[in-house]
Structure formats: C-alpha cells, structure tokens
Length: 554
Image (cartoon, rainbow, N blue to C red):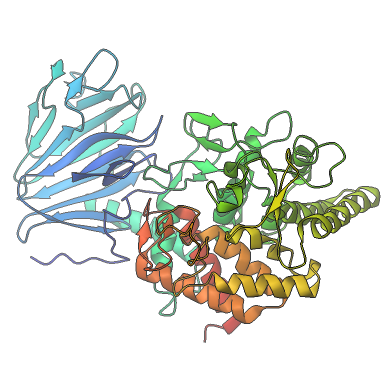
C-alpha cells in the first residue's frame, strides 16, 4: 500500500519527531553523536535519556511529518501521533511491534523497572534516569508482556501483533486510568491543526520561494517544552537531540524568529534567562530541566535583540543589571573596555581570537555593549538616566576605536599582559554590528574583510586559507547561524546592502539544501554536529521573512 504524507517530510535521523510543549520525542539519536538502529522514545527531563525502543517485527520504512510518524512495509502499517504534550497514541494494522526498555539492565540506582499495574491493567516502566513513569495502556488488540517485575538484566516490555492500539504516557507518580477521548484519526487531525496554526503565525509569507520555511517552523515548534524544573516559561530548546538546553544568547534568535506572529512566546524566550539572573546581574551560561550553569556567561547581544522585537514589556531593570555586570565585574578599574574570561563567554568557544590568551578585551564585546547602552538610553525612565547611558555608550565607542582599531583591523588585547594581536577569525569583524556608528573607513575595511570569509555556502568563521581552518572545527571554520544574522544585520546598517543580500541568500540556500544543523562545513555545505538546531531554523525564518518584505514576495 502507498502511505500518503502531508506537510514537510523529514528524516528521523536528522530531526526528532516531537510535539510543542512535550519533554520527549522519538528518534534513533540516543546520545551525543550516537545513533541506534531503532526509533526510541527519548526524554529530556533530568537530561537526555533513551527510555524505550519501538521495534517493528518486520523491516519497515519510517516516514515523519509534523503530525504523524509512520512505519510501513507495503501491507503492514504502524502510526504514531501525539494526543497531548505527555501522551502519544500508536496503532498497528497487521503489524507486529515490540515496545521495549532501551536499557536492559536494572540496578539499585539505574535502569528501568517494569510491571503490570493491577489497578487498571496497564504496563508501566519507572525509570531512574528521568525519575518519571511511562505507562502503556492497551486500547484494543492483545499484548504479551515481557519481563514484568524482572530484576537485573532482562528484556522488558510488551509485544503487539495483528490489529492493535496503545497509548503511551510520561508522568510523575500516579494519574487516573487512561481513557481515549478521540479516535486515532482525530488525534492526527488535531496535531496537524496545532502545527499548522504555529506555522501560519510565524511564517505567513511562506511559499515556493521559501521551500524550507515549514520545516524550519516545525524544528522550532517541536523543540518547545512546557515549563518544568528550572525552565520557568515555555521554552524553545536548542534541540531535542543532545543540545537540549537554553543558552543565554541562543534564546534571542528564537525570540526574534517567532516575534511577528507569537509575541508572547517571543517574550518568554527573551526573558527566560533573566528569571535566573544572579546577584551580580549576570545571566547563567545555560538552563535546562534540572541544571543551571553559571561557570561562564554569554555575550550581551540582548540590546541588539530588542531592536528586532515588538514593543518591550518592562525589561529595563533586567537589562540594566545585565549591563552593570559587564561594567563592574568585567572591567579592570581604570579601563573603559570590558573583557571576556574565556572564549566560552563570547559564544565562540574556540575561535582563534582566543589562541594567544583567553582573558581578553575583544572588539565584539565592546560593540555589543555599545548597542546595549544605546537601548538602555532609549528605554530609560528619565532624561538624566538616558543621558548617562548615552554618554557611557559614546565613551565605550571612542575607546573601542582608539584602543582596538590599529588603522586596518580590530585587534584583541590581553588584559593581564597588555599585548595585542589580530586573528583570521570572523569574530574580529563583529563590530560591524555597530553599523552607522562606525566611521566610514572602518566600515569599508570590515565589509571588505567580511567578504573574504564568504564561501559558496556562507560566512566561514575562520578564513578558509588560514592555517588554523578546520572543516569541522566548531568556530574555526564552519558556518553558523548567529554570526550570519548579526553580520548581515550590521552590514545593512553600515550601508552595504548588496553584500548583506548575498550573505542572506547563500545562508538561506544552505538551509534549503542541508537542513538546520548546528553548523555547516564552509567548503561543502554539509551539516555538522546536532542536525536539528533551533537557532539555525530561527535564522532561516528571520532572513527569509526579511527578504520577502524587502522584495514584496516577488
């Protein structure tokens, strides 16, 4: 039989199948860079954990769309769809399926315990790694239990055959017996409507000229989780693969991408890290379900991001404290320019800018703070505060040009040694974000240098002819979404729209060709690392929407 698919069809080996608000998804990706043969239910509560695997009893082709996951081999068919954020329905037509614990070993401190609940007859896994239960309720057909109440190593789960249907739920300790409220086809229809509504809100302009827009919308929609643990708001994770966190600059790009149609969700993205702002005003490095890390920070792009968001709620006090952190904790007394303590603080962890030293005053940091100071001046509650922030921005801009511009390029300076150096990293060119604030000769030099980083697929983060360039070198070569968006925006404001257009076009074409990977090989365009990264999808939506506005959809 032929299985008809509607909506964007994607590879489960690239993008997990999940649902807006859910903390779990279905994927063969079970750990960082680790691919199983079978599709697994993978939870992101307390970390990334494979819970159970779904094993068809005959070889089957897997087809994924935003609202339905299907295994088929011609005559036999298995369908899976989300009924809600914590419940999926699965049905089989003449198709056998084993639903088994991913880990066969139960110890006193790890692994799955499996039993049949005498209250309602359901089958339950309780898993140490997530601290949650996973209940399987048989709705029709027959199930054979495997390994119930077994200890140690055992095959645990159920075997289904013939015509059958089950519900699988993730929950904490107890809940009422499951009862199906809608037939399976209605569940699928409702899931499709949920996604279609999201896609229409964030990309109403999508069409033949933007062939990756619906899939980009799905990556964002499916990576969103409901509030739980340390995640205080609906949050778009970087991925429902192993990069299942919110980092304190990534969130800005996701906020911008959804702002036009879903402003409340956008502001939730923007404000989430500020919910965990510490006493010094610093934002955490990252947040996930059961962990907040403060050992590094991320660059202060939050003032820049406000320029791309709708009218702000009262974010002035939050932005003021975040800026004060940089002006106090990250400035040596008597110095105008702030510093990073490590490349991780910049978001460009291993960029060659940080090869000579790690504790450095860099031009990108000063540029971001200048923009942030300008936003504080705009948002300030009175003229005196506005004037104070504006004067601070002027002083930092003047210091940036006087201390880190050598007449040809921006350099970095070691805070402890006082020595300066330049590199072949695109990070050194990031002050283009200041746009019209820079003198014309500086803008021209930066634009010319940026163009040298432009490959057929986009902006390489290290010059391709640099001896330090690596095809899969993280920030030492590959193309990344955030650097693309920041530089494209800066070039427009600096008076270089043609170069900005070319950068936008090449990055959009790259996503349409290679998907929404964490980063891309700048020479081949191949996707690298995590293959379902939300800020990459967000960048595509942002750039495509802007292009459609500029060209009037023509």
